[in-house]
Image 1 (cartoon, rainbow, N blue to C red):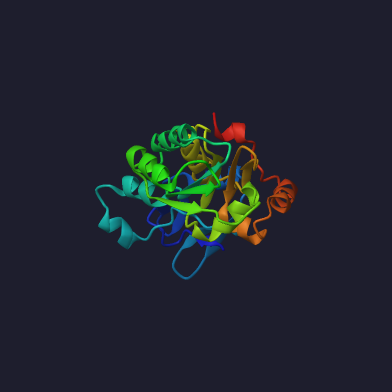
Image 2: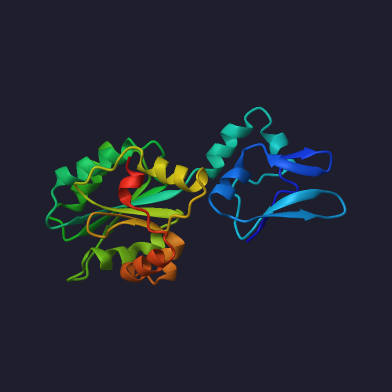
Length: 241
């Protein structure tokens, strides 16, 4: 989908000719090798961002509503929505769960939603609920796996339809979630204009774009092949620094 800058409140004009973007997005798109077209109609000359949605595009009517806090409101509206899935199995203890949940609480950008998967963990559901309620301020749900012989990949596929964020992080209980991980993903996508489809691995911590994951039929190996073709599998260490 193309994005026209014509009626955006952040478009900078000299009379009827657009010369720049007040948010410096045009230069960032160019650095990311995203094509910028010059266009015109009977009213103005303006830029069009080719095959890319600019998440910062806002109308003048929107700007009037938030005239005293435009940038603050824009930051809030464009902030990445990222779900976190915490995986528990028979190898995990309640201390593993406490460690991971408490680390999620310190995230600079709050997780959109948290799903705890209990795949035959030796922890009672009531204990999980108590730990989550004591340590956790985010929205969370518990998914109890009753099917036999399901591995991590199978469990992830089962709960994909419960996700409503743009991205998700799939992490083992016992792993500490870096406080700036979601912020770094947000910066990579919204500020550097990079395309991130996949990072990490299924055995440790996996970050994926939800739509791409579904298009690949929840198949991680297929998704990895597609991302490698497009050079869109970003090393996890880049996002965790």
